[in-house]
Amino acid sequence: VLFRSYPDTARMTVNRQYDNRMSEFAYDLLERYGHQAIEDIRRGTVTKAVEYVTYINIAVTGIISNITRSFNQSALAHMIYYGIRTCFTREARQALHGEIVAVGLFVQLHYNGLGGEMENLKEFMRHLDMPLSLRELGVEATEANLLILEQYLADSPYVERTEKGLGMLHESIRKLSE
Image 1 (cartoon, rainbow, N blue to C red):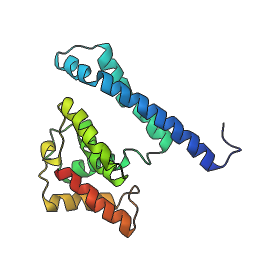
Image 2 (cartoon, one colour):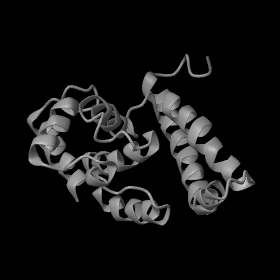
Image 3 (tube, one colour):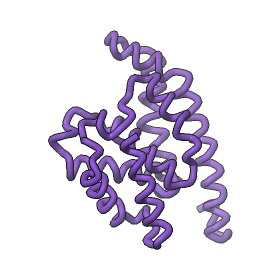
Image 4 (cartoon, rainbow, N blue to C red):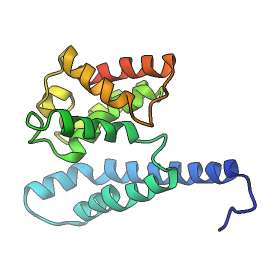
């Protein structure tokens, strides 16, 4: 093991740096080829753009997730996915995994204190004709539905179980109705 003689914090620092570089690389490729890949798929054509975007979405995101052990990235967004599939199965039956996770990223960004990034993500998703809200996924963003998802997420290991953490979750989950 490369980092055996170093403290765990040293390994995590290197992993975080590697994760950040890979994330930037993935995002750059998605920005560059995402729209073209969507158009090519609509035409039923497999192109380099489709291959790049598919590879980024499956292989690279899996590697990033493994490096970070799912913390400080899209874990809450995936918990939104599980919550929607568990609690709103029928309502969101037409939504794809990536669409639900992408909408969940608005919660993730706000919870991580990166709310300023939400508009860029919305614009990127809008450009790809993706859903931008809970309602567009097929689930009405009523207070009762938001509370169901909030309670589902509050039990996850990715939410700090303090007054501050739960308060931030409460604020963040409301981003699904915007």
